[in-house]
Image (cartoon, rainbow over all chains, first blue to last red; front, side, top):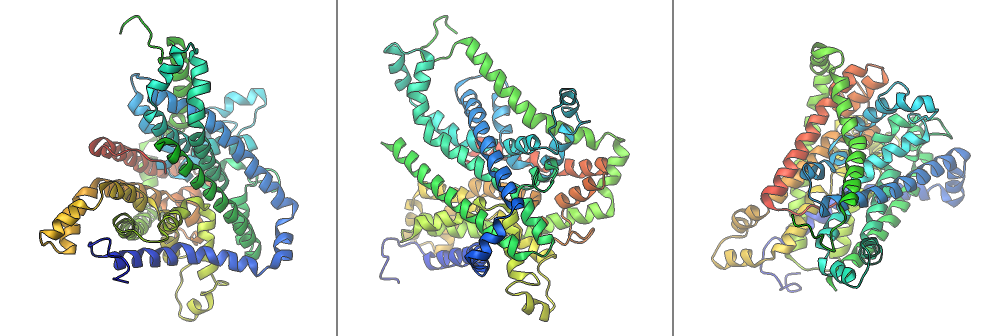
Length: 276
Length: 279
C-alpha cells in the first residue's frame, strides 16, 4: 500500500480511512443492507403482495402527494425568504436569518405537539378557522403544515449562498438594456437560481416523506385517510408484521437513494455552473 | 440614502411587501408555535411546571437523554475527524462515493433508521437468537437507542469538517512535519486549532439532534417509563395521556436546548466566519 500513494507525507491515512470505512460499514451500510436482504427474502411476488394493498397505496398517495405539495410551497416561500434575507437590509434581519434554522434545532416531537395544539379546533389558530369549516389538525391539511415547517430551512439554506454570490453586473446589464425589474428577475436571476431551487425543494420533499415526529401528532393517523408511510411502518412493527415493515422500508429506502442521487447530480451541476 | 433608485434595487413597495410576506410566514410557522410551547407549559402556573420537570420519570428521561447523547456524540465526533482527515488530506479512489455514503443517513427516514436495528438485533433479527442466548438486550433497551441515535446523527461532524479541511489544504501540516513534529503533534497543534470552530459547530448540531431525536429512538425504545424513555419520548407519553401542561413543560426544556443550539450556532458563524451550509 505504501508504495501506491506517495502523494502525501502526512501520516495516519491507513488508520483514519480504515476507521472511517469500518465505522460507516458497521453503523450504516451493513444495517441498511439487511433491509434489502430481508426484503429480497420475500421474493418479488411477496414484495408486491405486501405493498399492493389499499392501505399501503393510500399511505403512499398521502405521503408523496402532501410531500410534493409541501416541497413546492417551500420552494415558493423559501425563495421569497432567501431573497428578502440576502437582498434587503432591515431591522431584525439577522435575527430572522438565524431563526430559519429553528425547525432543525427544535426536536420534532416538540414541533409536533406545538403545531397540533395550535391548529386543534380549540387552539389559537384552529379556533379561528373552525367557523369557516376548515379542519387542519387531524386532517391532511395539518400534515401539510407540519411538512412545510420541517422542510423550510432546506430551500432557504440552499438558495442563500447562490443569491449571495450572484454578481450585480448581470442585473445591471439587464437593467441598462431596458429590462424591467421583473424581467430581470424572471429572465436573468431566476434561471440561475433554478438548480439550487430544485435541489432545495427536493431536499424538503425527501425530508417530508420520511418525517415522523412533527407529523405524527397532527396527522390523526386514521388508516387510509391520514396515515403516513413512516407511521404505517411503525404500525406494522407493533403488529409483529416484520416482513410488511421491511418491504415498506425497502421501498422508502430505494426512493430516498434515487432522490439522493438526483440531488448529488444537481449539486454537481450547480457547482460546475458557478465555476464556469 | 440618495433619491435615485439603483437599477438593481427593488422599488420600496416591493421590498415592503416581500419583507412583510417573509416575516408573516416565519411568524406563523416558527414563532407562534414556539411561543405556544412556553405559554402552554406555564399555563397552570410555575408550580405545575416545576413539578412536571422534577418528577422522577421526567428526571430519569433527562438523564437517559444525556446518557445517549454522551455516548453517541463523541463517537460521531471522532468519526468525523477521522473521515475528514482521510478525505481531505489524501487522495484515493472512491472518495466521492465515500462522501456520498457518509451523507446517506440524512436521506433515510428516522423510522427506517430505527427499523434497521430491529432487523439486526430484535428477537426475530439476525443476531436475535445469539443475543437472547447470551442474555444481552439491545432492542427495547439503551444500546439500541444509542445505535439509532448514532445512525441519525452520523454525518453532522464529518460534513462540517470535510469542506473546511479540503479548503485549508496540507501546507501547514507539511511545514510542521518538516520541522520535526510527530504526526500526532502535527494533528494536535496544527490541524486541531485550525478546525476547532467547525468541530464545535458540528458537535453542537450533532448534540441537538441526538437529544431531540424522536422517530428512530421511538422504534427501538421499549417505552418503559423511567427506564427507556428519553425526554422526547416522555413528552409523547404525557401528551397522549392528555397531560398537556406536563408535556409542554418537558417540551419547553427541549425548546430551550434548541434555542441554545441556535444561539451558539449563530455565535460560531459570526465568530469563525463560517459559511452556512444546508443540513
